[in-house]
Amino acid sequence: MNLDHHLGCACCTLPILDELVHTAEGQADWRRQLEAFASNPKHYPQLPRHENMIFHGGIIRPLASSHPDRVEALGIAAGRIVATGSLHDVRTEMASHFPYREVVLEDNQTLMPGLIDPHLHIVPSAIFQGWLQLGPFGDHDKSHPESQRLLPDYRYEYIAGKIKDAINHPKVQTTDGVRWITGFGVDPSLMKKWTNINSSMLDELAGPHSNIAIFLLNSSGHIGYANSVAMNQAKLTPEEIDKSKGVFTETGIGSILKAIPKLQLLEGLVENILPLLHEASSRGITTVLDAGVGSSLKEIEVLLLETLANLSLSPVRICAALYSNELAQMARWMNEFKPDLNSQNDSNFMIKALKLVADGSNQGLTGFQYQPYLYTQTPDKDGVNHSVPGVPDTGLYNFRLPPASCCEGNHQQNSPLNAYLQLAMSQGWPVLVHANGDQGMELVLDSYQQAIQITGADVARLRPRVEHASLMSTSTIHRMAKLGISPSFLIGHVGYWGYTFQQNVLGEARSQLLDRCKSALEAGMRISLHSDHFVSPLGPLRMAEQAIYRKMEGAPGEEKPVLNEEERISRLQALKAVTLDAAWQCHMDHLIGSLEPGKLADLVLLAEDPLNETIENLRDIPVLATWRGGTQVYAYDKH
Picture 1 (tube, rainbow, N blue to C red):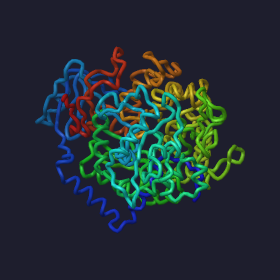
Picture 2 (cartoon, rainbow, N blue to C red; picture 1 turned 135 degrees about the horizontal axis):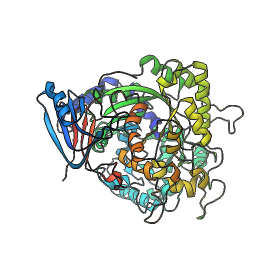
Picture 3 (cartoon, helix red, strand yellow; picture 1 turned 90 degrees about the horizontal axis):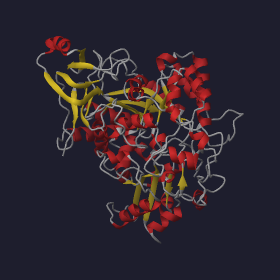
Picture 4 (tube, one colour; picture 1 turned 45 degrees about the vertical axis):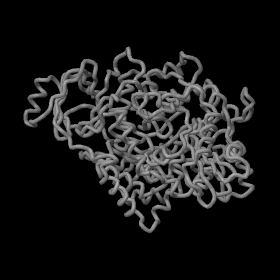
């Protein structure tokens, strides 16, 4: 078995799911399951029809490029915004849409455009929701604000305790004499003491001569951990087991996942998708872009999400970028689908782009760097070496490297990245490319530049993106702007991981290059902020807060230090990065992202105004109601 490391993320390495395409029932079986689920009102009732309304009072913020920052009233009808402006003018415009209901907002209540998360992963998030939750975020109900904060004392002992409890209180029956314990969210980089998990530690938890197979996934989705029983179930050779020490990146993760009983891996998948989407709605989100659809289920994943959306079960609108790290699969996508870039319809599901993953995760030490990660060659102050077994100390790159680049070997795809980009852009497809490391960023821009020059692609129309764009020098930023590419930032890298990047992963100097939002804006680029959920919690207001203040929440003490104060952005800029500019990156700004006549009536009602300079904790502002296309899809429950 070949365990050469190949990076994507766990959402791109669920190979057992691919078997579902080839079952006897196949795609028709999935459709029947969804339709049966949709017809059962005890799960989630179908969404109500939209209604005609006038909102006035309180604070109404259109967040439009060329409109006032505040209006007196807003009218919606038939799912669209009819008018904004004075109450008299809005009532006049709404006269032809009678009957309508008037909603009077309280003094501080604020009506804004529906929020957008332009990069998350729906199906893997739903699968991992059924696993032990071992992550560093608040161990609370998802509706609780603490679920968007770091645990104050996250340690390996916390993870071990949860695993022991699962072992002692089994919820899953054995299969062929083996009982699987699966956990998600492990993050050594955020532990109070960095602890590298390996097979020996997991064997100790399982007990001697155990029949318990343990598999854990890192919160980044780029690293997995397995005990001896799990590796034996995956039929790894003794040499592979000894070499890996139970730590795996992509191919190895896939090998372990194939060994997990299919029914256990997929248990509750459909049921877990809907709570995730309703959680998004409760955070004020009306549109999401799944940045990796088809990574494992291929065409059936498209069918799953499209059917779910069109059965009127999803409270959020779903856009998709199709995972395309294999050229043959990219060609199949392009033959089967066309990107929806300018439709005027209110569609529940839309394919927008292709997705490529160039490197790994910086917090997982697999993003592709010029210089080694800290403590991969020498131990840290606690005597711990942070290196990942079998992974170079500068991380990994997915595509064939240019001859002059270092580290060329068997870790890469056979084709260079620019071959993928040329194929996509020549056929009018927008592309989203994942890049975290500083060398990964430069290689991605090299490939974009070659593809643009060769194809003559209309960059203004395609709006190519770099996902995460974590480490950028000033020259990289200006080069990116000149190419017409825009970044979408996983801003949790600053808020949640900033301190550990500074102290344990990148060092002081490189950490200053993290998520340079202000520099990107000053260079003329439009930016967005995203969660990359499952990697960080849902919450556009939290993301805006982290971009505004850039506080390193993992630092010790009550007063949190700021990471590169020069890169802080204004409240208005941060809110546009989760509304209008996020919509622009998703080719949706003609429909959503601002409150303007003719656009879809995607609205969120907040208890307070996030533009109020006296409010620092934006993530704590209660979301009172969410409307998608004029239909109320969420209402705050005080109880």
